[in-house]
Image (cartoon, rainbow, N blue to C red):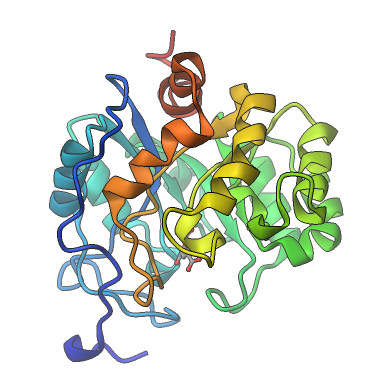
Amino acid sequence: MTADTTDRIVSWHADPSVPRFVPPAGAVDAHCHVFGPMAQFPFSAKAKYLPQDAGPDRLFALRDRLGLSRNVIVQASCHGTDNSATLHAIARSAGRARGVAVVDPAITDIELETLHAGGIRGVRFNFLKRLVDDAPKDKFIEIAHRIKALGWHVVVYFEAGILAELRPFLDAIPTLLVIDHMGRPDVAQGPDGIDMRAFRALLDSRPDIWTKVTCPDRLDPAGSPWDDFARTVAPLVVDYADRVLWGTDWPHPNMQDAIPDDGALVDMIPRIAPTAQLQRKLLIDNPMRLYWPEEAR
Ligand code: 0GY
């Protein structure tokens, strides 16, 4: 992909609202990304989209505007396996960000330790064909065994249609497993629809499978206020309260045709986690256990 500035996509809201919901002090945005800045951290030659710069200053300004305290920065596919932009953002956070990396199977143990020292606590395996050229399951399993020694976890991104096919692979992951965006169910089916039933069966198969109850904007084509998302996801948050994470998904890669208002995304929180106890688990206790275990209560 060429790096012509004029082609570069903006996928985030220019002026997000201040949410009505006030997150509890210490709340974590456990799924967000940074893009570049490109002059410092060029995008991968294999990138499937070419975004405008969305670096740490913007991310941390949004964190403060939304009333959040910390970020978990997930390496975006446009940066390939070069995690420099993610590490740079973590280093700029004064301890308030950690990250999830995407690594090449040939990565050395010393490089993994350097990522750990830079705040990385997990690796992401992406199965979306529109984002990555290949997803080598055997190599991913090897990586998962290697990162287990560091106490990291695995994050997997896939769409509901391939869950059955992926089950043997997921079953073979030897670490705690976090599924991005609930494996992208069709939320119009409702909480008892075929996609959520299959996803619950996955969660029920192991106590160490967690999920991110994220991305109403991606999962609910009816659009804001994302009522299908709210009614489908709320029961999941109640039933798996100790295994759910929440995040903004800022800067919303590839959402340029339906850019969500980040304030409205925060206002989804009390609709899917209606009590103070559920909110505390979702926004503080669970992400702290996974990303800042040394500070977790
Ligand atoms: C997400 C979603 C997407 C993109 C990426 O790494 C990425 O490029 O994560 C997407 O386009 O669905 O998880 O934020």
